[in-house]
Amino acid sequence: MTSDTLASYPGINPHRIPRHVAIIMDGNGRWAKQQGHMRIFGHKHGVNAVRNTLEFAAEVGIEFVTLYAFSTENWNRPEREINALMQLLVDTIEKELPNLMKNNIRLKTIGNIHQLPSRCVRQLKETEAATAGNTRTTLILALSYSGRWDIIEAVKKIALNAQNGEIDIENINEDTLNRALNTAEYPNPDLLIRTSGEMRISNFLLWEIAYSEIHFTSVLWPDFRKEHFLEAVLDYQSRERRFGKTSDQLAEDGKGVNPI
Ligand code: FPP
Image 1 (tube, helix red, strand yellow):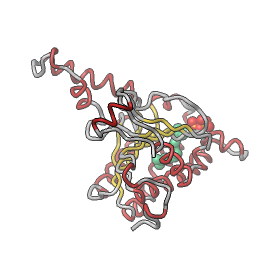
Image 2: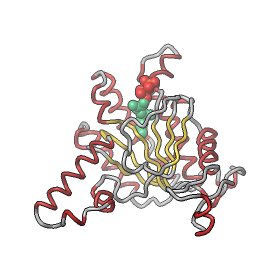
Image 3: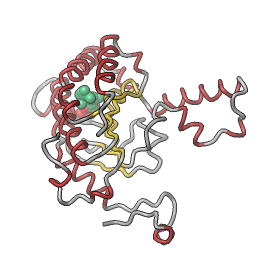
């Protein structure tokens, strides 16, 4: 059981909970600098925000949360910061296992995981196995991940299948690519959140966010708490998702989601 439930958040429409929320956790370095500390201090405090975020997701019934924890481009950071981040990842996943179990959260990953140090890969696999039976929320950690990398890998798989005569080039469609991506087993994000006031996508889930609602907040990631996540969900619930149609069409076919 989690400490709160959906009923603890009276402003929320229980019929329009986003199924999948993706988050660009940004601002750890700036947060640390503001406090006069090294960047890793910000990353360490970012773990509190991760814990709070996951607890909220489980409480309100968000089925999937994807966190951009380490991008392909992050390999270009100073070696010292990379090493500290990898150690933090191992320690956090190990230490947070009781919380993942308590909140019924299953861990999964996307990205070029085998580029990570072997101790990270081992810990990820162990925690994935330990949480495999959890059903409330799936936490998808994007590690050594970028949207372009995933698209290129998917294109390679499709090209190989075409070369082997397993698929006809004429039959390649959106679904072919959906199925070849690392995110194949998950629905597309309904909501994308980016913290720290930056308004960029930074090579995250490029294909999958085609119709996602985007919420930018100036809060730096280590300060991000349930109240900020709630604000993002309320913002999402106030939007009309048209998927290219008109408002009138949505009202006619009953498929639209009108602002509350
Ligand atoms: C971006 O802030 C943050 C990261 C690259 C790393 C995110 C890692 C964590 C929150 C900690 C561990 C997470 C898990 C899931 C165990 P930045 O460094 O780019 O900040 P800046 O833009 O202010 O420099």
